[in-house]
Amino acid sequence: MQAQRSTQPPSALEAGLSHQSDKQALVDWVFSRVANRYDLGNDIMSAGFHTRWKKRLVAYADLKPGMRVLDIACGTGDVTWMVAAEVPGGEVIGTDINPDMMRPAAAKRPAICDAEVRFVQADAGRLPLEDASFDRITCGYAGRGFPDWPAVLGESFRVLKPGGHFWNLDFARPPLSWWDAVYRGYMTVSGAMLGTVLHGDPRTYIYIPASMKHYPGQRWLEEQMREVGFETELIETMACLMAYNHGIRPA
Image (tube, rainbow, N blue to C red; front, side, top):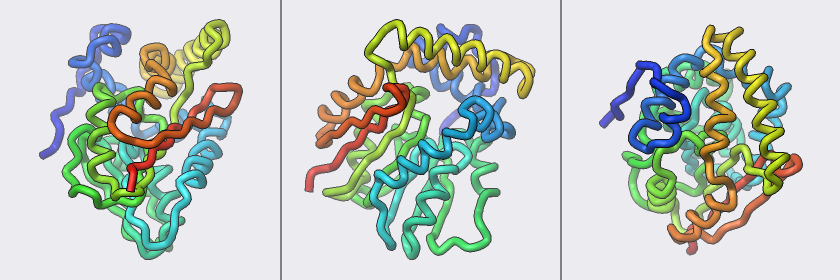
């Protein structure tokens, strides 16, 4: 069953991020607006570094030929295709709740790809996938938009094979409050300018620092992962601006 989506703009950005019942509508609105220029916006805002951080995510996942991998909230498919290159003879499924984001993903298919790759519209908190069927799960820069992280973790744990690994990459919450404020301040100013230039609406990229503010952070996520049953590892990098949350489903 496909998830219901809203294409109407939220009445208030902060209000939408503050209430679980409104958050999905806000996320749908933002990503439907930015889908066609999402990759360009990422390149500009990160000076191209987002690709490096995603490649590190894939390297950490320790992929092998023939593996079955799930890339949740795959967006435009950057991580999905990076994963596919590492699992020849395997299968990669990219899921996202927003079909507008996945259209560019399908168009990125390389001329040669030795893995089976497909994209499926699905809510990461209600995956239409079988139990214990994946060797790895990846998620890149999407978790701040999940209305219900515990549900996503529960589904990820369910569909992973025993001994399988879950890897999440996202903006971190620095432990120093002043550094956190400076970081988000820069993102707010640059995001407003970029959103106006690329999409005619500053809210489309102000969403990023606003969602960072409402995200409890990588240490909170690590605790949530442990509650679900994962054995966890946390890697913080870039002066605690980026974080990789790693979980293993016990064998």
